[in-house]
Length: 293
Image (cartoon, rainbow, N blue to C red; front, side, top):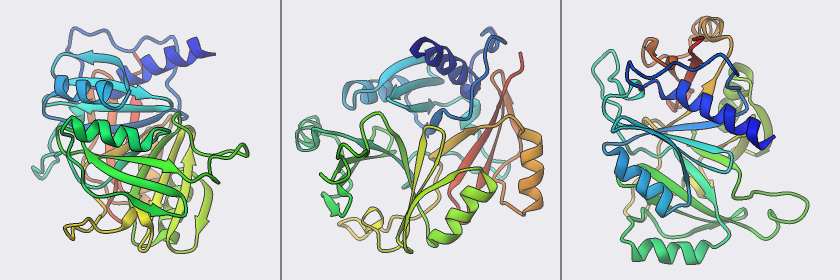
């Protein structure tokens, strides 16, 4: 089973990268990337620097790298695509807007050595966005990678990590900011096929699709509190989840019919086709169809 998952991982990395040189062989038709893989894309200006940060400081493994354009790293169920200058996943929008690093959409890493990791990161000069925030689910804090992309470190409460089941370091989790939790839940479950795992009133909900858990933080939740300098955590930005779909063209037609906002037109690369939509709060979601070759 691990060998099969590794093969699938390699195939989905090549298909999602979309940034290989023209001499790179296309994805072979020996397997199909599937919708259960949890994939996130970050924009970076220096791929080598980003790879070192994620592998040396946060325990990711380097799965593959294509020169200075693209790399993929993984941690448990989470695959993080690092799109450098020149990759298809970093091309400007039709209106000229550049895809930049930063924003507030972020991966969430559950760690067992929360305090010790924070000490090591501070000693290494890693930028921290805030102080530790505590809520019913545990403790959390945000750091920046070398390009300003946020990463949330989370220590779950003792109750949530009980033998009955709870978050672990193998989970793939992403946090989005939303203004209306009910509306966000409807969008992700009805339009993109997520399942509702839990909801806490108007403050918070968690939805999932395969290995991906998406946290929807509404007003009042601990994951949406302002920074110490007063900056508000807002929706939008360019950091995004990537959904591999089999019915690419049909899904696009259904989303357009439902008046879902699209950021761009279909971008095509050696690895396949991709397009970005927005959820009701302006958070981006990338839809991807792998190359048939």
